[in-house]
Length: 390
Picture 1 (cartoon, rainbow, N blue to C red):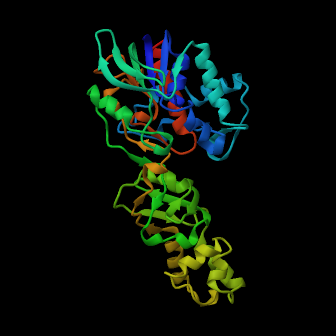
Picture 2: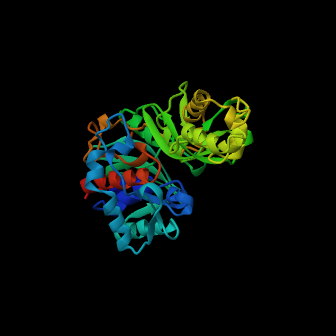
Picture 3: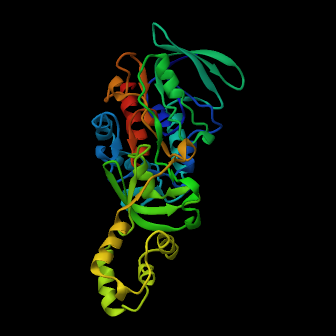
């Protein structure tokens, strides 16, 4: 079996690349169906891109690497694509775009595009024993029916990262990279909930509140969710990509409010009320009860001086917490790190040292923010490779 291009992985990046690459194209995936991560994303509606997608929303060892692919295939290009396929969509908060109907519409579109491009798709199959040949690459293709030897002029690795192993995610891309001498940066879970010792927030499980969470040099203002194991919610997931073990995070529970000012004003009008009663007008009651266990919040508002109110406000707006870790790849939405971008061409995603070998999507050391950015990287990096393989 000989192909012009063999693509390992039938996820977002692999399918997009296959739909646009030239010549005879083979796609191999071990799953029963292609695009499973697309199908489950966004609550089944697929947050397929973001209106505000710019290079500064991506983390990488080389912050400039993603610029070329993102500029040459933008969010507007993908929006135009789904519009042409009649897929209705809507915007949620912060520029996040979702299908009006099912995420399956995106999968169906990509499958149809692959079929129109004459792509050969082998599911429930594995590729092993990769080798470089004079004319390209070879590997053993194990299908439910037989094992065959495949040769291809080009090889594209689109197997993703390690996130969500229950869906079959593995480190295959990194293993293939090692086989061909392509360097891989440190990998770790990203867009992932934090855990804390001794079920610290178990009593607050289910409570959500607006917050601004800071980690490293980044700050994200979105919802925070308390869980049995720790903290989750969009603000936490975003901050997790910038967090390192042993570092604290900072939580502002009143990101759009002046708690000291609010309480001083109410002291003049309802000074006989308990402080906790007034706090509960702009913070969840269960959260106020939890905070009262470690902060002295006794007494009426009239009993609180400006200095004490300022001190309380600072504790609410600069709540420093020390996570013990994260929930790991089990629940991480993406993998941070991956194929070293210094080893790839930013224009074609091709290995600089191994002609014909391309890496795209999550396997590469480019990780986007929560909210459709990682899907856009999948589309953009796939198109960068596909144009080189046209």
